[in-house]
Amino acid sequence: EESKFDQVMEVNAKGPFLGLKAAIPAMTERGGGSFVITSSVAGVIGASSLSPYVMSKHAVVGLMKSASKECASLNIRVNTVAPTFVETPMVKKFFKDKKFKDMVLKNIPLGRLAKESDIATATVYLASNASSMITGTSLVIDGGWTAQ
Image (tube, rainbow, N blue to C red; front, side):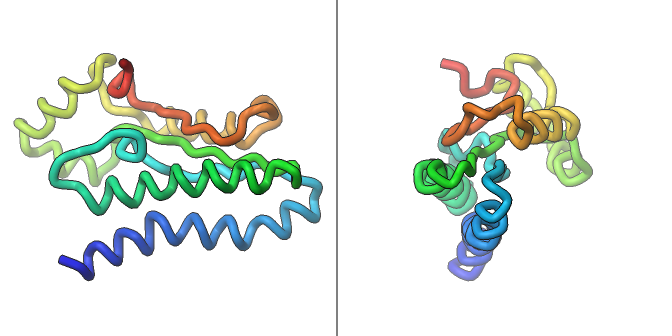
């Protein structure tokens, strides 16, 4: 349905665009900084039956790559974290379907969902000076799902 597509794009793609647009002037005044956008493993691979979501997360990665180049001269770094399924109440609801849960876990070589702390630690790292040479990167937190 087109209205659902629009809603997914509004939240997942337009939201980070507007956030970055609003943050750049303040970050520039402060001499730079780090902007971390939440994408998804779906931003670096495809997934059947999830086209609008996948498209929106690919848009986030494209935004990050362009913004990282545009903002580099301002000393602003732009990256994404791209997690797999995270152990949250919402995901636990999806996992009531045993076939779905088994399919997802089969694709994660480490054999578990990400924890909220896995995503938080990666985000803090990208936001910190410890990653001062990292911009234009998606830090994929997927337990090996996208390993090639």
